[in-house]
Image (cartoon, rainbow, N blue to C red):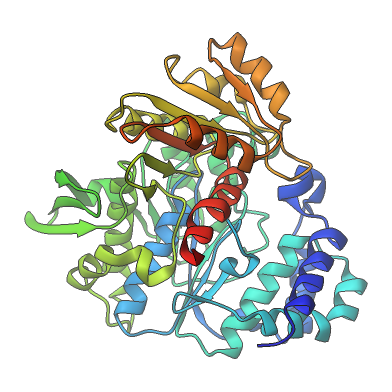
Length: 442
């Protein structure tokens, strides 16, 4: 392992030198694919050297990407996985067989291509996409699961020609960038649909169905709706697994499966993964629904997924979830109501460009709130969040950092209470740095 200082300096260069959406918002976005194409051309077009699956959607694309990667790994394929944003370490974005690329690799890539970076002036996201493609090509991955960052049509990942495209669902998020109606947002996501490449839609809705149908017809892309092909009935849940009966509607077959993905919302993603696996099995990939069901039992251990209904501690209960828009938060808060706890605590923070009023209207008024902001310029200041929350009927205190908020909540809680940490990837990332990773070192 090389000098950790070199890695830290490299990250500082990437984070500070390049426009970064997570820090500054839409000012970091480049409105076309030009920079990504230039970068990848200079690298020898690494995106053409491995097979891929492309995944977009408002919610669920991260879980779906990790679950599908777990299926491919368990089937014996060397599997790349590109997701964003990261929670704790930058290298979470680029994994091969569940393991992040090495710190040395990140340092070497940036050092070797610094002149190229200076010439093209890419955004942070554009360079990380190029890095991922290069890593997957160098390591000769059999297949890579590629998650879009934002939207689809103009997303930097959209220079690949995948075996399969997946759009998990459409709900309201990033209205200032993607559109004010579900149909407008769906149009941006549908930009990943390619000529003659099958596409799976995870969840149907009347507002978006016509958009996907028209895009698929224009591109002669076979269209599949996961919820039309699969049904899931939850049998039970414990602290490690959800147990389902999976119903294949076409074959009228019922199979039992269990998964370590514990969020109620994961049933949508599982239907999508099972549909995707059936379609991928028509290629020369040795994958099967039976194998997929086995792989779903250990998605977290296989791929390193965290932050999705992540039960960090049992007593008192501490749960982290990266839900950050009204549709995602509604699912999480419904599940939190079902968690046993004498008193409920919520550590919450948002970024400035979210519809905070609409989100806060979903939160229970009888919980104890700890308002905070992540350590990024784009974060909504905790005091501002508290003012908005008070108007929404929520009571709590504002804290200068995520760590202060989590520490204060833990000091107040007793063994029979429950804490939810949510609102953004960045809130959850900083909380996990404090909770999970420090505990691992203790």
